[in-house]
Length: 156
Image 1 (spheres, rainbow, N blue to C red):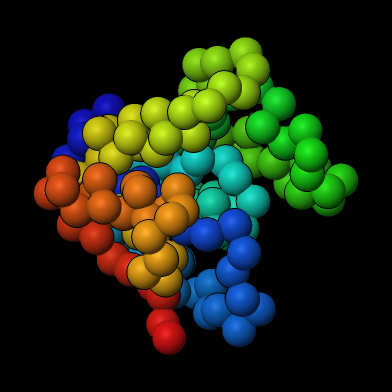
Image 2 (image 1 turned 90 degrees about the vertical axis):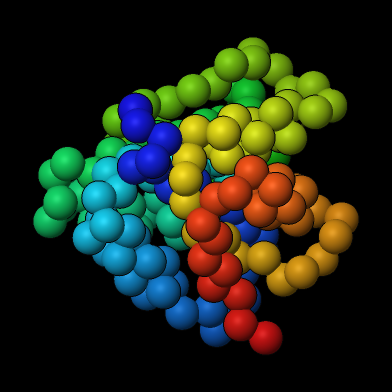
């Protein structure tokens, strides 16, 4: 994979119902037009799920597009609702590549996953509300420090 042709996603697990998810699709289409062909999600509920679904939809008209899932550990969905678990399984089945380096959760595996996504990317599409104490905030700050081109879809 060419880092310069990759985009990661980061965003909150709780996305308000008024959020226009077509913004994700438009961002993906824009990046595809600029040569991006690999899109990396962390596999979480919320924004990650919306992004994975948008990449899967974009791949139908752009077969060169690849979906990579960087999950932090096996069983990350253990405490999720049944519907979310089913969606996650479908996303994993649809992915072109799945990284699940750890067998079980440990303190820090989410941060490690987030940093790997950023390190593999030149672009980041996010849904970040500016809050400091969150994995999304941590990933956003690391992406900014790492020089990624960031598109924040959060709208107050």
